Image 1 (cartoon, rainbow, N blue to C red):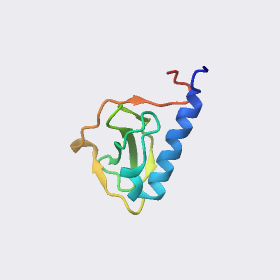
Image 2: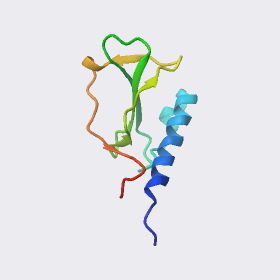
Image 3: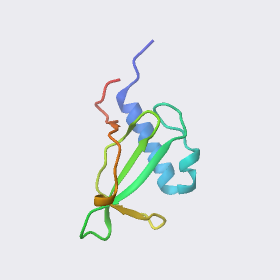
Length: 100
């Protein structure tokens, strides 16, 4: 049996994020790319003084894995939460060079 390719895991997470970003109603129906549970979460975190720049945080509550938060744009359908008022979980980042 071969080891899973870390780049494949990252691509699966990117695909899931793109699906949810384009179709937000699918968040609760999209399985986690790592564990398969229907526990994905997506928050758009805004920082004080910024109106349009946000940091999307996308993770699974079941296995505590997710994409690294990066700078992004708030989609028209989303509402941001302020950095000062959110408590993001400490989840394991899925990145292309990660090894399982």
